[in-house]
Image (tube, rainbow, N blue to C red):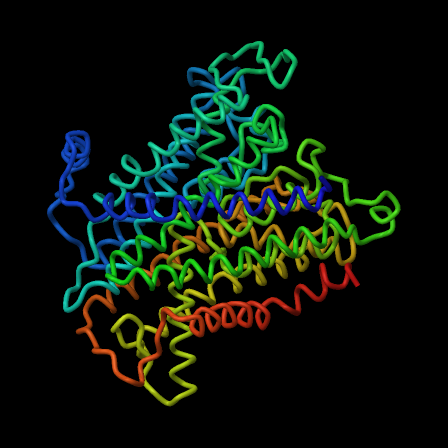
Length: 551
């Protein structure tokens, strides 16, 4: 079997597996966020935090709850790192420096999980488990909660209430993320991923040999990472490390986990609005964009553009030999199509056009399928923009799911879309204007690509990097931290404001002039709007970076 054939089989098996779990997992998540019964554990949590599970919140209260929870989480995680050297299980490591602690705290609270440090030599076990890993769950749950609140805005009428954040957060963690994490961790351990809590050395048998390693809670952190919640890892080499990703089988499983929840959330959307076909339309848009990305990344990397790759027959630099070019390229596409950011190869070593595709994936807004929750609400924003454009074309007030998209709604949608490009382009320009681009490994177009990729990853809360750039300086930690913070919470505020505006509307009956939003025409329009908006926004920067290098 050739590398290309093996890559096709690999991708097709992922498609089949994701299609198989779409309905059952989507239905389970729907029941988790829509049910009325509270478990004993959930009731105990509500009493502990003083939340009334029967009380609903307006969009403003919901937004303030999100911001308050995230602010407390950020302060706690920052302080946790600063006193690490005094804590149990610190492994003798020093306290994290202030700018590094700020960047990491912001990174994990915003679900970016960008790491400007080597995990195994910077963070002790307690900070990894009780700090970073906890945020892997709750920051992901925040994204799902916001997506659910937006869907309630479409599903409800004549009310200002979009749910209860504390109930949504608790249920998503306990009923969705934790069970999948436990099952995924067990599967990864079966595949050879190490799981222990030793501060010294342990023997671990992996694919035919016994290795001596530094112990760490790798398996559990790895599966949390691959649930679309974490761009970092226990080891600096991330999913290219044999103790985090030992075999081609675990590589497949990690990609599956990356895509699992985001691709199943449209089922929740369809059930909540009472139209399964609306969910199918959204997942169809996601799938078309995802397949295009995976195909292009594989084509560019297998073609091996460049003198050296063509001379040896493949673009092997920066690739892990266990996964070959194709499976590495598929992983790169999956991790940047979502907000995961985990890597099993060195993106900075990709061919110029092959490295451009992961960057474009993030520039799309990570909506194909996107992160846990953030992908769904990003795609719904694009659907709103699409029906607005369609309404302008026919001279009719645009409607989506029985809700009119007026001036107020399109303002929120437009502001949501404009936040990330403004952060990416302003941050990239600031790096060059202040001379901080000098930390890039390369000059010329590739050096620009390294800087552009860093700000694209941070502002879109992805967490991956080209890698050929030093970002653990005070300027970089501060600048990227600000981009992560603003890139996460400004869009969330606009999404929740849109949810509140939609929930207050009375339903508008469909008529002959209503654009059907469940048919292939609408799917194609959303794909087109997504690509055109990104092309108009980022094409000049891409032309100076990866396109110039590739040509």
